[in-house]
Image 1: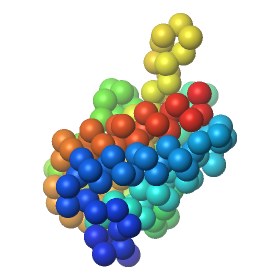
Image 2: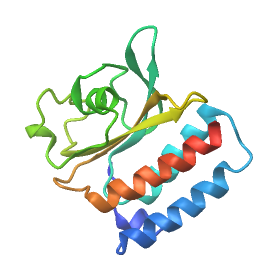
Image 3: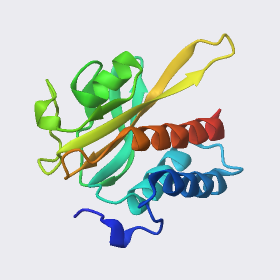
Length: 171
């Protein structure tokens, strides 16, 4: 099941305004709560139920001991549990520490198909700056869509801003 615009509570016909409203809602939702899992769960639900044309929204958390991303809170169909660093879109975002905006996942070398209905994807690394100003990988936000080219630079900017709000709530 995908979520289209008619399920959205926020109007994304103007993406910048839509993301600004979503950021305001996320700020209010996370205010005063410091628990990582609770905040990841609410963030995934808020995004999934407000952004149109998604079939999956969630997080993979970095586990340094196993050197893998491990499934965290999400909304959508069941998903791959473990992803190796550098593998697929999520593993690439984690390894490069750069947002991966993929217009057609079938053209992405090594794409991991957890849901065959997914055709485009955006993955944002969650980077925490330590007191020594070193950036540590916390995990990634992963969004999938059944539409080719669902995500663009405006989505990238809006989602990176949401991740910054999330990171401030837990650190």
